[in-house]
Image: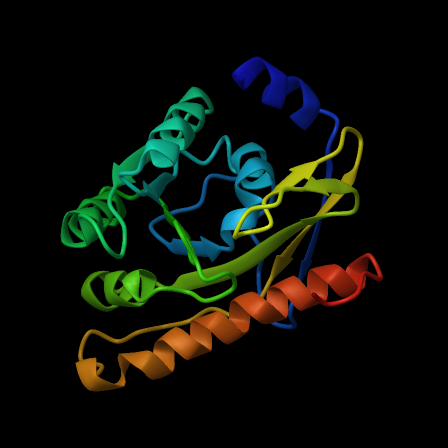
Length: 208
């Protein structure tokens, strides 16, 4: 699997766009102790784009999560196991340690079971307890196979262009009231959707 993804991934051509005032993370860079979020459907291009980042990704404890973890580790990532429903506290503490160690934490914001394009509260809580900002991005292939799954999982075709679209960052102060965290979750969700819509527009695709 690693060899296949690695070979096909070498043919992908990444293009980066960003909202005004946003400094994107470029291919090959090693970002610092920040939190990144993207939609679950973009796992494959994300794996290739961030393969030099030494980032740590929150992966569910499901059987599918085990398979994804093995693939990610082949590309130099590490994984913290947990989700919004199983092992959530342990997962957040593991990612907090990741940030304290100077590494990047990445969430599939709507994973592992959806609903699609609806971020969970995990990234917001991690930002609150760690002080790290949240970057929102979307990876959209110009040509891809779309799986019949809850997340419309994308498998980019060989030699396709893939746009990496970045939106504004979300900041959650440590003293932000717990009762108002939903407003920050919506702020992050809006940023992720703007990034996705911006990416679709880049390739003149219809919004779905």
